[in-house]
Amino acid sequence: MSIGNHPAVEVKQLGKTYGSGATAFTALRDINMRVEPGEFIMLEGPSGSGKTTLLSILGCVLSPSAGQVKLFGEDVSGRKDSELPQLRLSYIGFVFQGHNLVASLTARENIALVLQLRGWSVQKAHKEAGLLLEQVGLPGKAESKPGDLSGGQRQRVAIARALAGGPPLILADEPTAALDAENGLKVTEILRQLAREQGRTVLVVTHDNRIYHLADRILHIEDGRMREAHHEQAPQ
Image 1 (cartoon, one colour):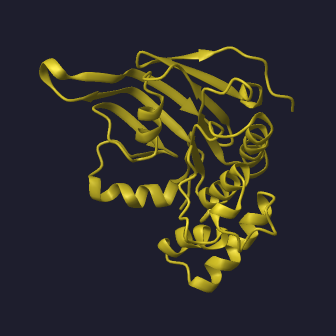
Image 2 (image 1 turned 120 degrees about the vertical axis):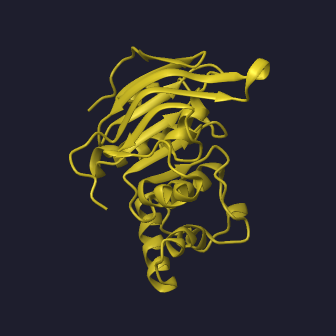
């Protein structure tokens, strides 16, 4: 897949409404945003502001009610539901608040599973999974199951899984919510390093003001509308 010289994310007049008539609820209103390849962006705002809805649309999990979404120059808005899984495989790696690892599989197997879904052989997938675990600082935990890992270690495995197959866009939904300050910072620094060194585009939904200083930009969402927040730049 070639991502060319396009913006990583380009959103124009995006809207999302659930339901219809008197019970309709508008989660997003006239959202416009542009994110360049290699940027590390945080989306923050109060509960119910539309952050997770926006992330789900960018992640090709939900379809917008209005407007346009382009990922690396490709218009993904208005696609059929049957096309969304392939778009996710092509462009996106997800990191969830609860890590969503399969409890019965080892760290290596959790990562390899994603690669096998992409068509990799078992042997090649397991080898790549080991390399990804080294990348996130867990070279000795390949055969450990999630129950044998700390919260911070599980979230690192989840990041390694998100990187499997080389998706250019990483979307993280509250990745530090269940972590203490030290582990939350470490996990965020790994995500930031991916943007800096590998040119991955990373969008993080977060309430965690302990990590705001690491972002290139912070976008604030409230009542379904977006504005750019001001903060101190992360050290280079």
